[in-house]
Length: 110
Length: 111
Image (tube, rainbow over all chains, first blue to last red; front, side):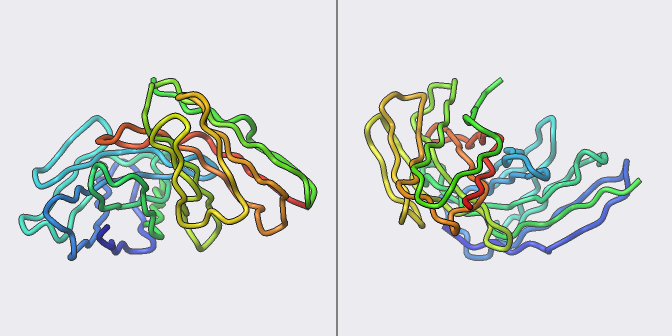
């Protein structure tokens, strides 16, 4: 599975959009981009995934660049409850295990 | 809602004890996973199972074993607990092509 690079931490004001970047320059053609988050003392929670088209669900939007070497997770209106560590993971769907890097610690401030 | 439950949120055991961590999922998923999470090391895969009675070693299987007698249940066993197995243990389940769903975690302390 391809390696990902994320900033270690970010701040965001409550009510504003949080844009979390991820670099995955060695991604291969059959690998998807997955995003999970982990709120303190809880298990990781799936957010969204995509292959090459932009995706949106009730939690977030995922923007993948045309060359697929990077992506951005967008939380459109961040709340205090979105404070968590966000993980970007690249894998094939049938790839089994998830390889979690260090992630980005997002702090949403009032 | 998909539910993955783990038998305990907190557990304290003594060195040398045999420890069972139970995980149950209600979504008829084929795959189930056991991870441990430690500060600075992230999540690491211990074992996974892609079918009943099938198991595969993950990245750090030493000191652990697993059991999957029924599709919905995946157990992690510490044959003889040691202090370096103090950790947060996370169970997950998922279909082959979809996301994994995690349980709330068991924080195990070995004294």
